[in-house]
Image 1 (spheres, one colour):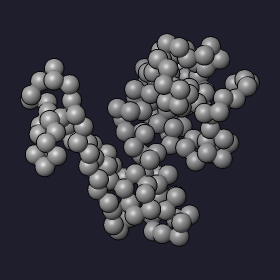
Image 2 (cartoon, helix red, strand yellow):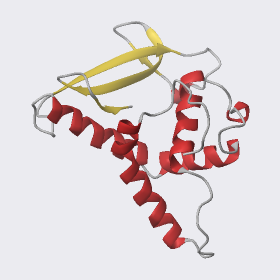
Image 3 (cartoon, rainbow, N blue to C red):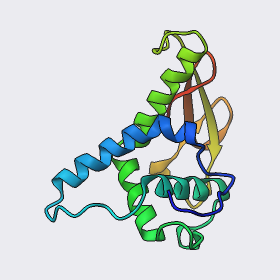
Length: 156
């Protein structure tokens, strides 16, 4: 990790220890496929902290502070992690750890589904929206699935 003053969104050492093996394995698999064989030049923890900073502050990628890796690099890692399911894998692993810490089995045996109707603009194409007749709302439905202690299992 680089020597910079930490931001409030940065991961603690204990939290980094939980996710570092997954990210390191992901990077090793990608580097093994790289034709040049050159090692990566950025620290994974710095990249992950930059993603958390963008998530927490809501800034555009280009406005990342200069003490993080370049915004293009951070976004490329973020997009790869998103597209290859790394965030979903981390969520699954961390949810299992939290359940065990609560004295439960790693796999949930029951879940709670909640949906919400969201109004859309009148300019949205009709093919991408629907109607919730009970609520008299034209828009889209979104939902989440949680286990019985409130941990996110899926969203859509």
